[in-house]
Length: 293
Image 1 (cartoon, rainbow, N blue to C red):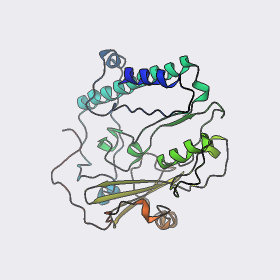
Image 2: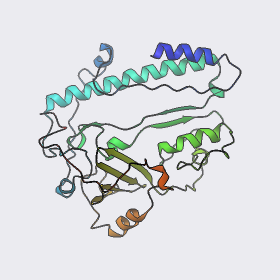
Image 3: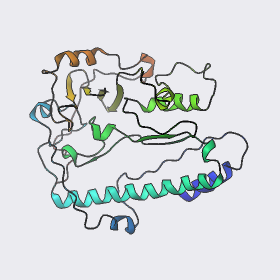
Image 4: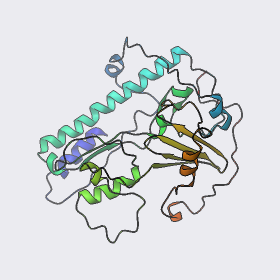
């Protein structure tokens, strides 16, 4: 796929008209397949299994995962090392492939005329909290890389809560396009943040995840995360005192909890699919575990 992408990019960069180019890598999804030299990069590296465990206060509510997971069960060390090595080998592999694409753009002489975005649709657990892959609304599964390059904007980093919904209005804004005929959007342009603005309109980043009859919501501010599963199970995480998301602190931070619970998740109900029914009961598969045994 990378070779085809490079060929397409070489053709696009010879055009005089504006263009948009998108490509996505499946890795580092399972199965962990990458050339041997990327596995060799981590040969001898001492991977240490994460020690983060979910406390009883969170196990009780099970607000984070689609399955009735065995939270207390630990991944055997030999399995963890093998899977962690595979994950990072695939990350290194994709890093090289992205570099090849960007090198093609550099060689075309069009880099400074191009807006570049590198991001992902979700994060990934590598044994944290006893989980693997993405099936939670914890930080490991929800937080993604977001790098935006525009030669007209200086370099910098922002820790403000943003969403993937913001990408479209950001690209429209950076490209100088007229968006007046576009219907109201839930996202907002990140251009002010890129220009160093300290005034940001989003108090938190919203995340949604639906699996069958189960629906998960997350509101992540700079310090807190409020999570809700269907219509009953809720929790509050304080990242200042609990950066590993081990405990539900809503009873100790009741004021913050109520404020985030009442805050609107969206600008308009039309943002949700027509068949959305948040109060449907949740059903669980008995005996299923996401943790290798």
